[in-house]
Amino acid sequence: MGFATLIANGQTFEIGAGAGTGAYYIIEDADNAAIIAYDSPASLFVDVKYNFKGRIDGVKLRLQNMSVHVLGMDYQTGVLLDGRVESFTTSLLYERLRTDRVFNVGYYFGMGVTQQDFKQVISNSIPAVQDRFMSLTFGGVYALRIQENLHLNLETGFLWTDPINSFRDSENWQTAGEDLSFLAQLGLSYRF
Image 1 (cartoon, one colour):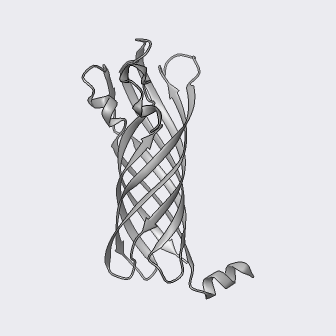
Image 2 (tube, helix red, strand yellow; image 1 turned 180 degrees about the horizontal axis):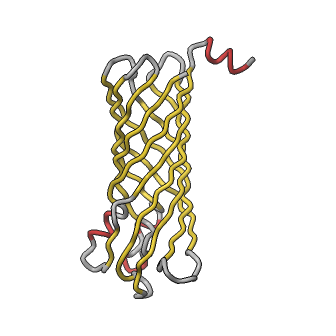
Image 3 (spheres, rainbow, N blue to C red; image 1 turned 45 degrees about the vertical axis):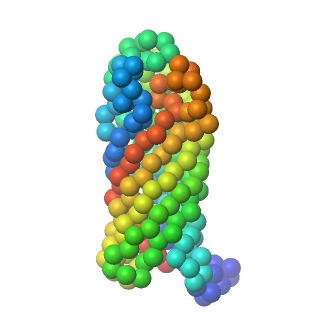
């Protein structure tokens, strides 16, 4: 009864999914003092959006998984790395995007929690280092209407993991820890 009432009053729900790549840990990767390199990450996401009645904005719950290969030397310990970083982020985002035109431009921002598993050397049996960080997300979205309720979306944005500890002295930073990642993702969304 409640769900039918929401639809009748003009609120809508939207589901979306997509994939992408980008640049993981861009500040650490660019640091000349760091002997480390990250490959381009693989990213997958799904989300559910609640659109406010009579407005072009809404709130989105996003689940996102990213994976990247890392090669080099650990910041703190000097251990040689040939590993993988897997992270899963749950975010609550505010999104402002028109959907009444063929091509629409908008933006999003929000915060969430990132669970990260850092396997420092893939070939050994040492378990992955697990961390949990607060994360911030912000970026732009470009939507192309394919059908009345179906859109092709391109998102470009940043994921900032552990922003609070980013302001510590760089000597205290950890490998695959607090940093900024850039993502470009292509996806589909369907509005109910």
